Amino acid sequence: MNDNGMGEPPHNGTQAGAARQAPYETAPSGSRAAIVGVSGAALSASEADFLSDAKPWGAILFARNIVSPDQVKALVHEIRAALGWRAPILIDQEGGRVARLRGPHWREWPAVGDWCVAADQGALSEQQLWEALWLRYRLIAAELLELGIDVDCAPLLDLRLPGAHDVIGDRALGATAATVAARAAAIAEGLHAGGVLSVVKHIPGHGRADLDSHAATPRIDASWAELSQTDFAAFAALADLPLGMTAHVIYEAVDPGQIATTSAKVIQDVVREEIGFDGLLMTDDLSMGAMAGGFSERAADALAAGCDIVLHCNGDLAEMQEAMRGVGLLQGDARRRADAAMRARLSPEPFDVAEALARLDALAPPGWRGALSTEGADA
Image (cartoon, rainbow, N blue to C red):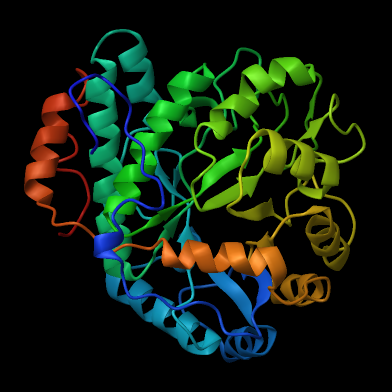
């Protein structure tokens, strides 16, 4: 973790660590601009055929896909064999409510927001929190990489704001852009040190939403100027990271007719220009309630608006087949960004798990001490 003794937050740009560049592949020329889920703990013959024929860029795993370490390793191998290359395998492993890997095989983590609130209340210093976040996500990276999973959909940069829906809630890192950005940088750096890529989400900001975009379409009525100073600013501070995920949210001051995922104005004027994010931009899940229309239409609209890749998560084969009808080849700027993300994968740095757990326990706020060394995790 970066620590120059001056209290500056950590940050891991893609250029750092080039000396430990991991062996990488970039996607075959026929790859298409999608990431998909699978239905269960093993790949069915029909799913293997779909992956081989449709050639999505990568795959994402959920709790339904997780039974045991050996089973997950086998599933990852099956997916990559069907795709024909060392494709990225994603997962949502924030800890707390959003964790696909759980005990007894993997560690059970408290909500990350609880530790952040503890720091806000003075239970640990901001520098201690950065170190704790780095250690937490370095440990998570070790668990993921052991399974062959090399992308974690974290950190979440959505602000914790009063009156918002609790879909973000205790997942949030803080209430201000500067605080969230510094804490998120520690998370990203911990993941990258462990050989796992991070995904900043939900760009350009879900924190103000008063509805859950899994079920409905949130509308945010804050002015563009206010958003620029708050929600958007958190992402601007981490604009050089290689992967991002959109918010299925309408920003009325920017584009009152489209959620960010399908708004060319939001993606071009806010995400690419104002925030300055030139990483690979994936949609949030196409099957969420905030989106409308058929799945091929949802996919085509998101790509036409400027998303690089669409994400379909629920493993429903018929939905995925329909969605892929709206998906073209991964090419142009999207291909450039995807290849850059693959090149950003680093070999993990040397790491002592027992030492990290002991240090994390020492940093833990009262009430959490002693938990992480005993809960979950076979290793």
